[in-house]
Image (cartoon, rainbow, N blue to C red; front, top):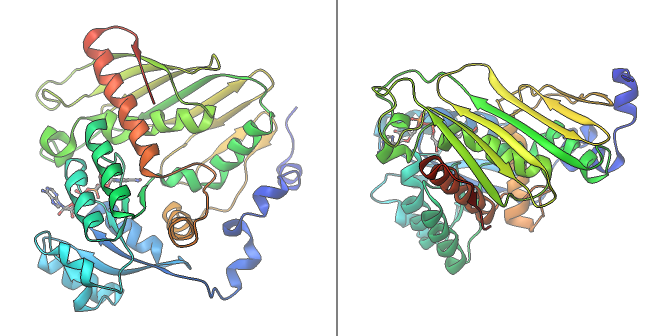
Length: 366
Ligand code: NAD
């Protein structure tokens, strides 16, 4: 039986509506708590998107930049009123340790640079938010987690979907048993990649192909949708264009994950097909379906109970406000976003690449 949109809104759970970022009345109240002062490292496409979304944050503020391009620094200074003393380049950003006006650095550079940059930021005594994938393999991710622990700074990974309201409603329903025993997840993550010369297609900068970039959404999503961590993987690779997708750059990988409770996930990661952004969760009593499921939104989704309805807000606005709460006030997110969570995904990706090579079922130890 399908419920009307109105019924569905009325039946939304109290805990979800009580979440601070969803309470519409709060939007108009003046916020007087602590503000996370953030410097963005890497002023590219995604860095720009984050900066724009942060304009609407109430708990986080863009106050600094780290870039290798002086002209970009100048234009960001003008656009976001960033003082000269909060601008750094890739050579001198260790000096950020002497800057009391910056609390955290958000690393938004090519994947293979994350490890060293995050470790340098940690050594400079600042909290770090690092884009996904947090590194290019689990060994690097472990070093990052260890360095942040040693430096006593927080390390968060830019998993914006962990704060997305429709995603969180499905997670709430699953925890409340509304789907019954969950036995199946399908994750399809892919797009057609353009420019063959970009860093995403260079192993030394990307660490891998579609799996590192977009397949990770299905890896990570399978865990928060099912609510468990996988114990085995199998995987198969298909390459149709060896010129564009060279050695070490995966074009398409299908993979399967097995979970301790008996659920299985069947996923696709690709750089060759468009319109692949779909999650499907099936339980004994119900289901959830999202398409798009991890794009910038609006996310569209429904369950056996009806359509999921929430106003769309830029994901990065929610993310940065919530991350400010985690870093400054010790708030616990509903779905963890710490370095340990990023490390788990890197271990799974390592196992997927291994399974492609061996053709065997590979165990995962998280
Ligand atoms: P981009 O190419 O648009 O930007 C990368 C930036 O890094 C550029 O400003 C570039 O100048 C700088 N850079 C510094 N050193 C570099 C080097 N040696 N080679 C190349 N560039 C260098 O890339 P992007 O799309 O902004 O992606 C950056 C990171 O953000 C990646 O890790 C990516 O996976 C992640 N990302 C996350 C999301 C998300 O939704 N969470 C979306 C897009 C990208």
